[in-house]
Image: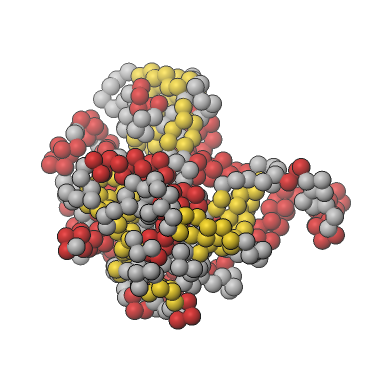
Length: 529
């Protein structure tokens, strides 16, 4: 809620890309008789050095910061996905992966020295009492939440709290003179990992998953059952930009499509111990075509699902080569509210391939591989992807697949790397469009809040004047954007963002996908089956 919600989920996507897939169980070494640091002269040396600095160094120094630098330095010498999470970030990261948090359930902006509600989360405590988009929260339990205090992220502490506790909010609503009072009971608010679910055609369903959280399997099953009732015989599973998450969630999603006893993946640790994961008889979509959408930002758990379906000849993988992460992490507490996610195993797809790309050249080179894909032409042509014949595998159905760095799609969709298109897409994903549209809606808030989805679809159009307004908005922020060949795309995106703020993510994704080359390609494939 609050500061958590105002940034939406991208912060957690970035963290998840760094962490990749991990097992959720935590270890506490305090019960170990020798402790994790006992009986090892090298570890004792590190402890002794920190103690010397703490007690003897000439100037005052924060040894906690030294410890964090040391921990990060150690992990950087392991692999790119073994990472340290400081106490200040661990709660937010864990809330994201758990799939819920305790709060009042709003997304908001700090807007003109006030807290402006973008949207009350559907089903959340604020929506239940009638708070809606455009409302300004000016006080909580008698404490003003306006002016300079709004710039402080600690403001969320005034809105967050324990479950079942109450907070009294004073709200200024556009068009109403007097302040409104709302008593909101804080409760568990879901952080949805299924962004959208709708029928793309009469028989083709669509589901988008943004990460693999603890709640993802339940969200997905609810969505797939709903689509089946609406007539879905085929499915698009959109994993583009999905950075991963829990390995167990990935296994359960793959299980929905695979027949009983089909291998989903296997893991191997440092001792060579192998653990296999098989599908059960609980799948809800074991028949009918499945089209899995991936791109260069689909990682770890996304690759497990794509790899399991590809290797079992179950799905058609569409898009571009995925990130290339085949390592498994386990989260371990460090005793001070921080944690480390340490790589403990490698995972392999059913044919036996590892899709982990090399990281011997260091973390910087590892994460800059994205740029090399641009340079070698891979974003425009599947023929530019370099594969090693030694990493060649064959599925039971005779399809040739490769290990060594991501999942290569069965149907390639080139990336539009035109500067104008890239700039528009960046403005969308970075949140600039969202902020601009919020301010646009604010100018006629009562009208927009009164619209039904049907009326919005028919009445609202993004004008050329709105387009120029957005260009000017970006220029004021020293972000030059050119609109010539992609004006229709920009109009589509701006209307989709407006729909998102008024009606939610599903309408947003549906409008965006109406202009999406990959979605349109799948619709053609579906009709030709």
